[in-house]
Image 1 (cartoon, rainbow, N blue to C red):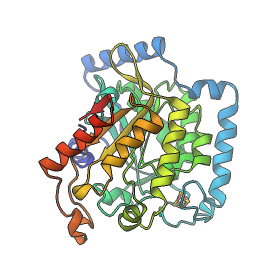
Image 2: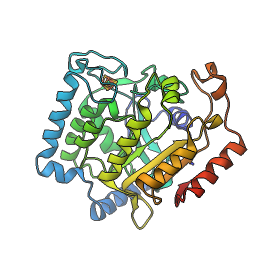
Image 3: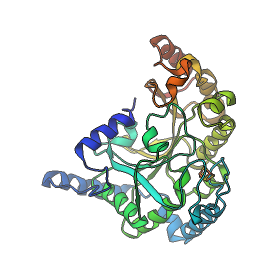
Image 4: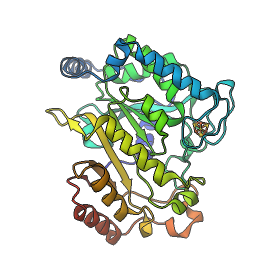
Length: 347
Ligand code: SF4
């Protein structure tokens, strides 16, 4: 099970290595540098991220342009606010035309296939399009904590993570900033980026936008949080269409990249990693979720069933989610997953 992101922030903040997006990826110790260089060489020989082919064909520029067009009357995500983000307007996600990032660093608490020896190169974007009332990172996702940075700086951050030996670039909550990400990616490609991109999302993604990411993203890592529209409406800023939107989005992700494939060392190279947070009183609909995965995706889907729910932010306003799950609820969730025939459970 992955370490909580809150814990990750505390660790990274204490290390003061990434809060201000300063020298991300710089390495001072000689031994460590040597291992990163050898890591980089290994990647160059054995792996080529999908976006390189798109860039060679000139297609990545077109995709980027199409994404910026959507920004003008923003329908990047299912909220379809239709505000002019390019002119600095904002609505539900609170993001404007600025690229705002909270932190970046090597994260060792993500799923094992993402971590390897040197960690997942995680970049946390400020703000969010879903706004769950129990968000563990509400300071970043609701309050928008972070700093505005340039595309060049984001590209340098990606390259710094690669220099550090990270296995991938893990884009956390990228749905509302994806035009910025693609622009930065193109700068980073021109300077040698070769790591796969992980699209790490709450699952509230629009099909049209995802189709523009086909051939850019190697690894999709969505949550599938809820199966009941009344529940998502109540806890996630009236997102009553969440269950159907997330289901369609995850099917599209699966169509693009398939089941998770790993290299000889068990490092993720391409595919879907699906996350599901078990909630108190089965409010996440875990029984329905596991059946859906088995029937609509595949029993071989990599599923991280997560037990670490704990009330945060406004969760205390709702008595039914103002506690952790019990051992009995967790056992029930695991039994459901096994009964559904899921073979790649990360517990
Ligand atoms: S990305 Fe933000 S502004 Fe655009 S549609 Fe979604 S919530 Fe609205």
